[in-house]
Image 1 (cartoon, rainbow, N blue to C red):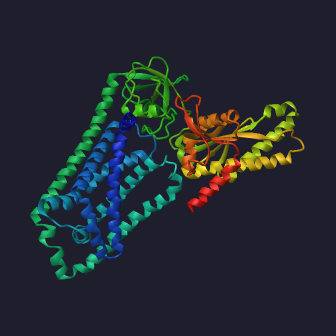
Image 2: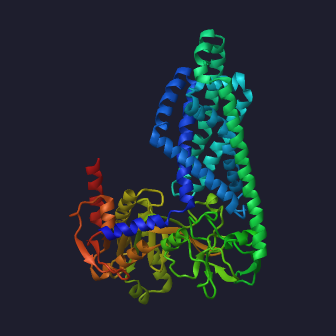
Image 3: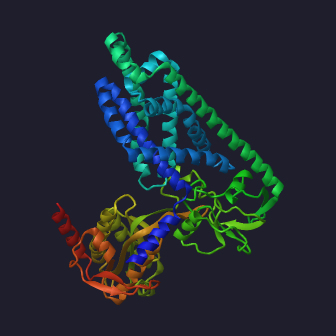
Length: 578
């Protein structure tokens, strides 16, 4: 047990890259934004609600471990943003990406005054600047700070939402969740800014009260003029320092470009007769973008997918070793061939010839937006293979058109059963069919739908046999194999001949189980994975250990002599659950 756990941990570590660190740190910062904005929104209720909210807000975020985690995330995220400004050579993946980078880099410059005035003022001088003091600064003492605060709120929120979009857009649930996420993305900052406005109005009315001014605008809370001047100088110094750092990075980018050109150019040949010359140091994907060569990249060059894969022509031994992230992605998709590389990660130092493994017109960076289920994505599905028995003998004794008529009636009966159960007929192979369950449901429901479909197939084929009894010497028989697991779903094919289907070990196993129905003399073979996930009892169906072609270890399956019994089992389980 220890060895697999260690291997799993090593695989997780290999999958961690700069993007994962950026994602975690950004998520922490965005959680703070949500907390802060919801606190601002309490201003729409009353100033008392604001005071109560900020009490719990500061109590949580000033808890020492949380404070260390939050400010560490801020420093790491800012550093990674500055590094991205230096590291990125091309920004033409999508216009939204440079916008996200610009917004992210502008946040520290705009928020420094608030951090210094509130947090540093508290740490150095013990200032207790809460909502009354901040509203006084925004609406009376320094109105320009109000607009700066509102601007940084919008910029930080938009930057975070763009990051969440890039993270979640490839997730299977994103299409269903998108309207709710959009509503939250609009409502939360709007209510926060309205809360600031309402709180400011309440403060202005309280400002006429001398007792209020004496209590809320005291030296203990706002500090002395000398302390204020010191905080202003610190703010100015940090702002100019940050701008200087950005300027240094821009100069470093220019110096790198000159050095790369002096270091020489390399030729990239695309295997279709096209060759481009680029400076050393560019990734293959960046070279394609710079020279307007179509190149597939669903994730936009973030090493989150493998659609930019290329196959090296010739010797690949001289290429740079794959980074841990690239090695993780290639291993995940089963590409252990050293000649297969990710174009977004490979930075060749010499001339290179290759060809792309995915057609750019079917795997574009924005292809997911139009149809999120059409690009390759990994998800859990239940695969069902159904095959008609004896179709060869049937064809030998009938006219071709008669045979086609009977086969079509059989496939129609099977398809109707699949659709009635909530599945999707996917591929028709001769007199057999592949059906998929779970494209729009969870694992348990998909497994139960597949079992119910198997039972309905038996009922529909019985009706078909009765209808064709005058023309059939023997009733139509069938075999069914059902297995569930992680598969890749997407469009497979060429140009206008694309079909949506599933690929993976789980599909292959379902086909093997369907073949076993012949030797086991049964109507269906169901993997134990489907039985467990569906919630059926262990003794509901007889178990058997079988050897699966292509697998080293035997597999536990459930043999179903008559698929009609599955309907009773699924109904009984549903009643028990109720």
